[in-house]
Length: 285
Image 1 (cartoon, helix red, strand yellow):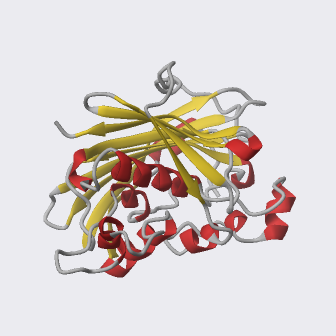
Image 2 (tube, helix red, strand yellow):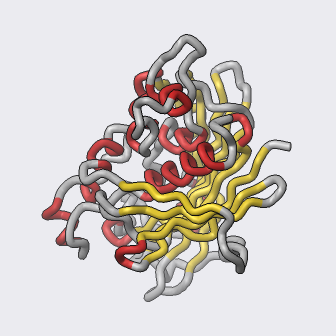
């Protein structure tokens, strides 16, 4: 196992990695973030059932179709690593099935110090097989137990705060007790989302919902409340993960609507916690 150095982390890459997903994968993803909760809602049925006009894919599905364990299994203390932020930029509408190629690499490493850990930011650039650009995905991780290696990069800029006013819309979603188990089938099979014993060993009373599932729920709320289910309107979507969601929690999503973007924040009122913060969804002009 190589030593974890700044130079080693910045050298990590995987290029031209092939992925494929099907309409079944798209329907499963849509169901896993709550689309089709009302099976008689014809707008939502388009995402979970192949009707005559063709199946639609939710933009946030992009975070699941090109997963790569670039910074896992290299010697970092994964049990103390947190997924801090995620930003998706779409170059074209996500198709309901596709073969794609992706490049993965580390774009930033900032050392907070021996007792404060590392910030590691990764990038995925995905394209269709004919080289049509599809999406870019940035992920920020906090490796809390791996600081002290030194770095010459600057810390990642803080995200834009939500507006200091009452939200224009607040949406309420009742998550399902088994939702993390369903979302695992989209590719995030980390045991903390399914195994009660391991969740308790790490410090949680029970398995937690995947952060990217919470982002998908927020994307669904924006699609339904602001975009009239027009997936092509969403150009980018990003947020900071600030607390955990337990399957079965009621999630409230606050939306602040501006001309070409929506700020969003997700809360669990019962536990008085903000679970997604500083969220921004930008629209195509």
